[in-house]
Length: 427
Picture 1: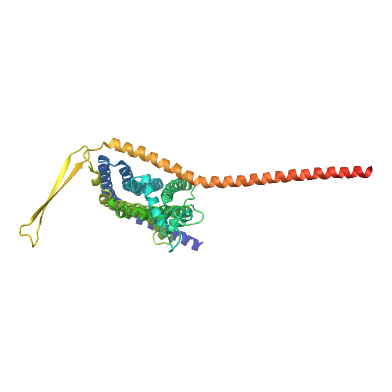
Picture 2: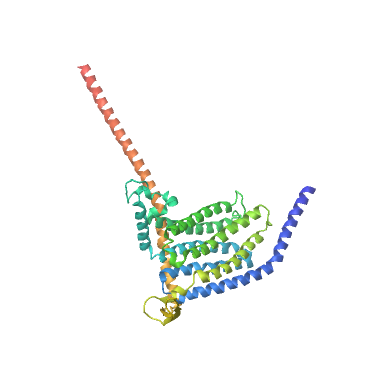
């Protein structure tokens, strides 16, 4: 009895100690997180508004705006969850769903920068033909349409050979993560209602470790598909400086996901107090700080300045910049004057309502189309398998029926022969 009471008192003291520790850090942490969130929201909304006002390239900018919205969504949900821990699960679901959509939007942005899906397919097919026409061994036969070279293993070894199939795999990888992330988020909500989710608990009777493994594999596969697509097309993407954009976006995805897993592991090993509010509060606090850093990076990486000018003389105000310089040479006494003049046509301001309408309608139709295509691609092999099974059963049933008919015919013939022989014996 004394031992059990002492253990109970120790547990109560540790819990009360962690709760008092959380209460001491809550107020200053909320103020600091609120300041970072204010910076993140101000910069992100300003940049998004710039893109909406200079909406001169809808094919690219609709996806840029979707990626930029990641910062306001993350920052708002994190500060709300930090302010009221009861909202943490709902905020986490919305944050996870938008993270998957932002990853899909980034992949669509890269495709748009390459001129759309048709241009990407043509580019990938040309790269595939160039590689397949080169014999691997001297004297080997050239076969540009060798289907064996387009196996799934070459996605890991030589993705350039896949051609248009690389785009299909990349889209499938991004969309499957978007679907799985959304499904797992709502599944976590249902498990939490029944008290078997166990956020941050790596125990077999909780749903958290299983969902974490599934989402980890799905996210890694989606990012790997995006990396392979980037490796093949990075030369054509050089005008948009893709590496900085790729790193800035990937850092947000990796930081938020692995940060949460790392905090859960530290809690499991006892490095931080096992108090639920402290774990979620620490995650939300760090995200608030990271979103301010991401907002500053987006101002340079996803700047709206390239979209504020149009190449041809259409509408808007024409501006010109004149640069003068001197060219000195030892052979010529008087220096030569050099003058260059660059003319820019400022794009007219776009109605924010029109740009938002285009983003919501066109972007939504694009997402629905890709989701339906991905589901069909996933169901296709299953349907083929079911069809083969049905055909197998049908063939077996037909064969059995034929065998039964043959056996019945044989029995009838034997019976007739027996009757004939018996009649002959009688006579």
